[in-house]
Length: 242
Figure (cartoon, rainbow, N blue to C red):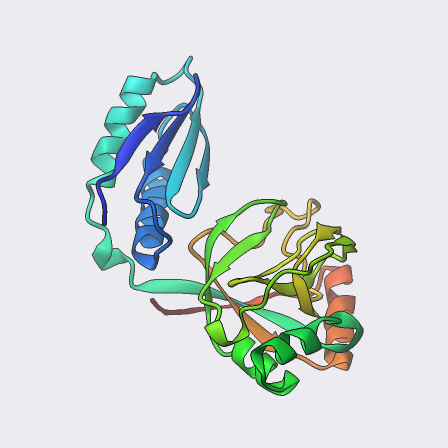
């Protein structure tokens, strides 16, 4: 891994650059640093925002100075956390593929030169690492999409994509947490709300977690959707090895 840089980012933010490439090694280091910061309870830190290769820390300069925070972070990023990065949280997200739920799945299959069934099998066969959250509250930037189903974005983006839509945009896949415009190829939909402002913790997942897409029938989709609306559905979360 490249040399870690700690930089100023305005009068109340500090930026830690862990490298300039997207990799699981860098992501694990960022995730571990975030966990260490939470355990340290550094007074004055307002927000911690992980990205692909960096970590932005917003702080209150009336409580902690830039120099003091920089010294604290210099010490934290030197901590060897490799031994602790052995487990992962995997959120199992049910998805109804194709039809009205995934109007572009045939495009994805045609681009890959395979059947729709094979697209579904490939897409749901692995755990996807959440590198970062952004664009919209709870929008997940996932890594690990099989190259076979990499698909270009739509030439003409949609004005509205419904919340819960699961799609592919180039080499990435993800879930739209809210109704929004977008240009990803839609392959399915989940009834699970990855962002719900009414929940105690509005965003379901965190950077460093994993998502596993689980194919379900339309009947099962509607059953789960009803439970979600009633507040009675609990997403399956399992632990696995990194």
